[in-house]
Length: 115
Image (cartoon, rainbow, N blue to C red; front, side, top):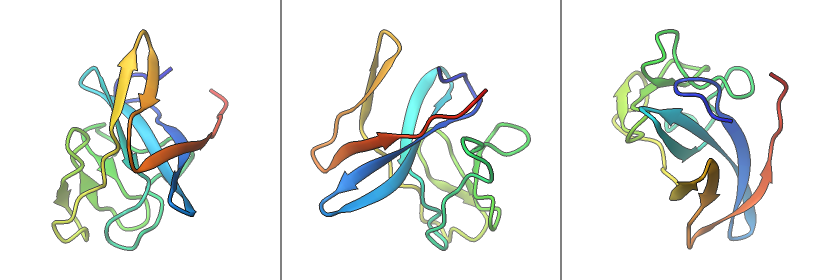
């Protein structure tokens, strides 16, 4: 279950012949999903599985270089992301179930974690 400004869920999506990391978070009461790639170096953002927010729980942060991203839009807000934001994934939520609704990406796997 995704808690507002809490831990995210990591998963993988297929994009053509590649499998790429992605994640979902809840912010402002809505679930948002992005590819798990910092726009600066292409590294995964979270420093521990599902830890995507900065200490104030205001921004998504890249653990490697500190780039900050708007959790609502994925836009770069500060740091070495050079104005380039995160790539959002189209999702929907119905009765607590989050579903990927993309023509380009298909769900490959979901990473479980212990609370």
